[in-house]
Length: 488
Ligand code: GDG
Image (cartoon, rainbow, N blue to C red):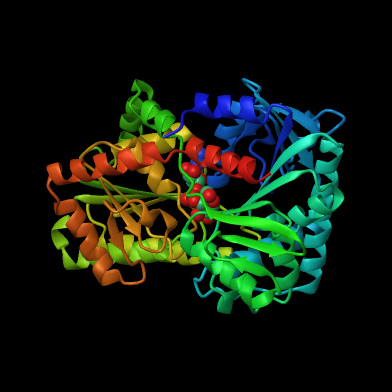
C-alpha cells in the first residue's frame, strides 16, 4: 500500500527539480454553460478518476484537450486554469482542437480504429487515411504545447493512452533529456490482431520513444513484446522486459491500476450517502425490493451491457421466484454518441430493456431500471451502498475500475459478478467470475451469488477490500515514478 502522503513525499523528494507533466486527451475538469452560469464538472472516466487524485496530491501540470463549451471563457492568456476550482492544487493547460481535428483524431482514429482494434469484441476497426492525418497533426499539437511548458527544464512527462501514441517519440526527438512514461489503459491485443493496422510501424515507433511503457497486466505486456518482435527490427529482451530500438531502450512493465480505497470507503459510510440512498430508493420505488443489483458504465459496446440484460432475462425465466423481488439498476453515462456503433448500441439497449420489462412487469414492478445519465460521485456511492450485488460484464477491459470502486464502497454482505475478460479478474479472485457471452451460466452465477450465505459474502468482500486497499491508486503512481527514476 502507499498513502497519498507517501506519494506526495516521493514526488517532493525525488522529482524535486523536475516539472511533473501529465498528458491525456480527456481533461479532468470541464466547464459548461448552464442557466445558472458557467459550471465545472468531472467526466466519467477511469483514467481521470485515477490521475486527478495523483496530481491533487503532488502538484504539476495536466495538458489535455479543452472540450467543454465554456472552457475558453475561464482560462488565462496561456490557456491555463488552476484546478480543482474549489481548492486549486495543480495547473490544467487546455489544447484547442478544430471540429475537423476532433472528428479525425478523436472520433476517427482513436475511437473507431484503435479502440476496436485493441478490444477483441468483434467490432470491425475503421482505417481512414484522413483520420490518420488528423491524428498525427493533433499529436504534434500536443508535443508543441508540452515543449512550451518544459522549455529546457528537467521534466517527467507521463502520457496517457491510445490517443497519444506518437507523442513519446515527438518529445524525445525534440528534447532527449525529457523523461517519458506512457501508460496504455486498454488491452494490447495479440500480434495477429494488431498486424492489420496500416500504421502499425509508426504507432510502435512512436510508443518506443518512451523510457517506460506501462500496461495493466503481464498478458498485455507480453502481447506488446510479441507485436514488436513481429513488426520491427528491434532487440526484444523478454526476461528484462525491455526493447532496444534505434539505440534507445524502453522498459515495458505491468502496473495494475487501482482506486483511492481510503477515500471511497470513508465517503461511502457517511450519513450524507446513507440519507441519499434512502431518498433514491423511495424515488425509484424500490424500498421493499429484496434483491437490488447495480451496474455503472460508460455506455460502450465493450462493457457487455446487452449481455448483462440477456442474463437477467434468463435469470427471471429460469428462477421465476425472483420476479417481483429483484431490481437491477443500470447507471449509464452516454459516451462517444457521434459514432454510429454507439448510436446502434443505445438503440439496442433501449429495445432490450423495453422488451424485458414488458415481459415481466406486474403491479407496477419492472426488473430493469435504466438511468441514462451522468451521476455525481455521491449518487454513485449511494447506488453502491443500497445494492446487494454489482455486475461488471465487460467483453474485454484493460482493468475496469467500477468493480474496484463498488467493492471499496460496498456493505459486507454483498457480491461482485465480474467478467473473466477484465484485467481486474486477475486480482479479484473472490468475485463470482462470469463469461458474459453465455447467458445460461451468467444467469446461474447471479443466482449463485444471491443464494450465498452472508458469512461467505462477507468473507469474500473482506478479501477483496484487502487487496484493493493494498494495491491502491497511489501505489500504482508511485511504482511508475520509481520505475522511471531507476532507469532515467
Ligand atoms: C479505461 C479502460 C481502465 C461511470 N459512470 C459515472 C461515473 N463513472 C466512472 C466510474 C469509473 C469510470 O467512470 C469508468 O472506469 P472504467 O475503468 O470502468 O472504464 P473506462 O472509462 O473504459 O476506462 C479501463 C481505466 O481506463 C483506467 O485505467 O480500468 O479498462 O477502458 O471511475 O466511477 N462517474 C460519475 N458519474 C457517472 O455516471 N461521476
